[in-house]
Length: 292
Image (cartoon, rainbow, N blue to C red; front, side):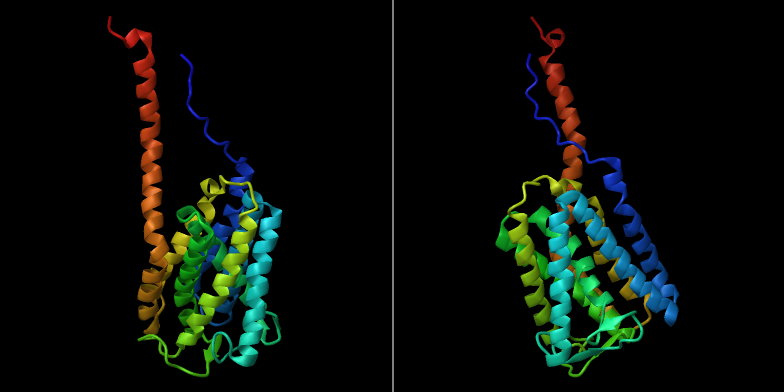
């Protein structure tokens, strides 16, 4: 009897899997150390977290989606992000009136610390990978990425403002974090949508249809950011307004996070039950098991 089962897609080489894990794990360790530090040590931990997360994302993207995609990812996130920050600090658009403290996070150019655009890359890629797993059509992915990035900023901005890395000229924000204006989140929605649109256009020309199968590292980083930040803001970081950002970030990132968990559970159940179904089919097709 002919076996008509479709062969499973080839697994990536082991080094491909391990290489992005190294900076990802180092970034998580730096994040765990962050609440335990203060002053210059905390600033160093902040830079380390962003740099390591960016390295993990770019390495994973290059290995699993190709060097061209990784370059476009960096340009569309760090490049567009940096441009938006320079324009934002100079004009107040699109985020509102704010300014950075430029002597704490390493080198700066045009009054924007250079680690800031790297944070756009570190945040965008895990959200993109989750959105790509959940949504196949381009407009839907753009919308999903935009919402995910907004949720990420609901953690990021309150934490960094509380730590004194930047400040706002005007208020009028969400309850509990009124010192960060709503214009900030409107700006994030706009800039994140532009970045996501660029990635959708590039990804639509790629033939790597199986890449979501190999996205364990960025998916783990997304889950860590979503759930770990909520825990850190509500328990480990002793700033009252972060209790509010814990809720906001948990809910908004959860728009992607909850369907992601459902998808992961279904995939796990399918991987467990799949071999059992194959064994049952083979047993049923075995002439020794037939009556007659």
